Length: 477
Figure 1 (cartoon, rainbow, N blue to C red):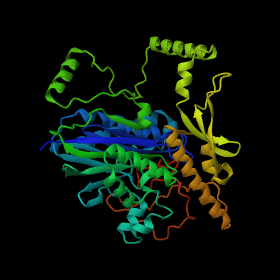
Figure 2 (figure 1 turned 90 degrees about the horizontal axis):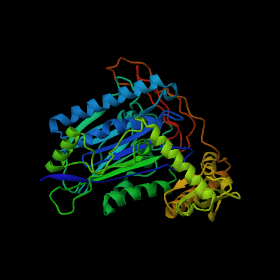
Figure 3 (figure 1 turned 120 degrees about the vertical axis):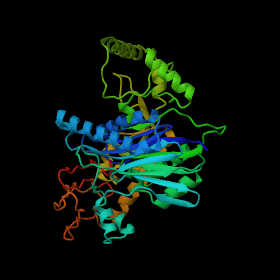
Figure 4 (figure 1 turned 180 degrees about the vertical axis):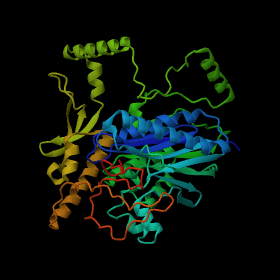
């Protein structure tokens, strides 16, 4: 019986101090990719979106089971080489990298490649299991019997990864091939979800959600309620009968950093023989697709002078229209936007956009909460000060609720005599003793245990030479 994938991808900035989303996600009829970028001020989002951009064309490939794993490995090696090239050409990108999980459908099977500590889960009947193994320092401790899985969740070095995509030649992923059965549900997530929400809760969401869309939305909602301080990205896919009446969409969904760095227009991927023949014909004759643009990498920034002039002209016309009182349409659109920011010492929901256009204010306080900005941790105060975007009013209210929980937690800590301030200064990357490449890395028992971390302790990469350590700019980036 032929299968198809019904999928949904979602991403959120989270409640931490990050001003940009460094996660990237792609979900299509044959391909699922999740990448959690790392590397500091401006590099994590670049790394994750470059990897997604390199893997996205696989969605249109006809792949046999024998070809799938080698094809994934080749694409990941190519993406890694492009990371190396980008870092050589731009020193600001030095040290960037990304975790990666990718699933490629081949007939009734799913080929998977995984590197890093982002996770994938599978729900099949009564069985729920994690189908990836973290490449992390605490996972090594678990494997050696030095700590339990419960202890790993609170270990001060739980954010230290031992293998990720960093542009180094030894960044090798784990690969596998599994049978897919109708009714299976898969979830891929960055650690913005798995570090803050237990596996039992994730299982409950996957079991109870009516559709992948509902499951993905619920995962983001629960992560925010758990006060995740990291970017959180999820992809949920369900295996369905390809010959059924209710066929899923084949339009790809791109979220996170890749959603901004790739064109936001997507079109259905040809899956039937007739559609593929038409696509080949258009390619041979040079005729455009009726729906115009497909996905295009933001790295391809070639733009004609004419398009620049048109955009500038339109921008100037918009400014003139607003200042002249003729910008009602733009004003109406702005009043459908919401964000969370500070107002008179309280956290408030604003309706509109945070920018002003000359003398025209484009936002106002929709409602002021009882949450005092001063009750929040310092890094969260900074996020509120920089404004926290929301998809709609309901999403803004959800973020207020999460901030209220965070404020209450801080008050409890302060009442116990411990100041609730900013997160600890990032711990320098830990380098394990050098061993031959073929010898497993065994951390020294004498590694000093740092002070208990805040939930947003930075992630570092621990690798054996020639790999380089790379630090996240927040937990799990």
